Image (cartoon, rainbow, N blue to C red; front, side, top):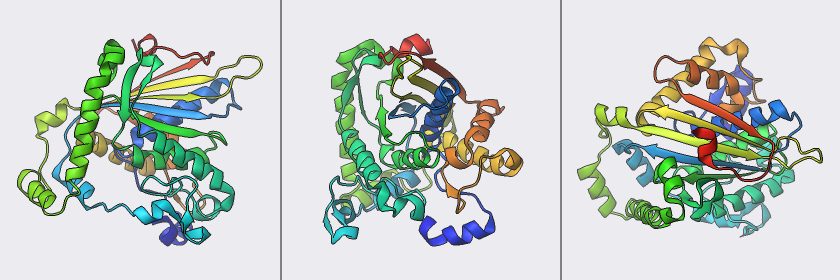
Length: 339
């Protein structure tokens, strides 16, 4: 869309944000807020590592499942580099180009950003593995099922807003939630792996011809989904961490942001994020960040602090946002900050 309509959007003065629901406001804004908090202490901080951990409770609707079913990954484009005689890529893509949402001329098709592309693609591959975290007392996380999509948004924000020239982003899922993962520690490995296997099998079934069509038609046709009561009980939490190298003087090196959204992620959270994004464009246009060259961009790039403030101040399911900045690179425990 950006390649096709960027010229027209640039002339019209429009701001076009493709992913401003649950995909991908929680990931994008939490990292944005963490970077802002870090730079409030150290203005010249250059982030090298950014992570988010997600805990969600909700239910995918029939429309979402239909979209997942209809998505056909372009395997050839992931493995072959068309700009170099279809040779094998140094680092294979995970579904799409990590820079797919960036500006076509200045970043996406600019050979000067090939190192960024490879570094970000490699981070996406590492992100497919389950592994423990010191901050959760060796509690285990698994890949977040929306990470492949959300990472593209965070990558675009990182380059547009200059988070750091060598940034890598990792998106994780805590299937047991924050508190249970912390409590179980390394014993969270088995249930986490079981849930990872179940998610993988579900995704595989959605790609099986005939069988997937039949199952979706019978059990989850488009238009069906969670009840109002189920949606009200849902939630989405994200814990973001950004790290910049310590200076000689030992300045601030880490910042964390915790955000909690009320309601089912795919329904209530998405509706809230989309509506508040639209209201930001209409009611707060004088306070918005600078517009991109062609008008296309991410929530953090084109809405940034305005959207964050709207979410915190809304009287309809206000979003919890807590920030912590630390002066040590040493790993911390999640509970020290949140609780």
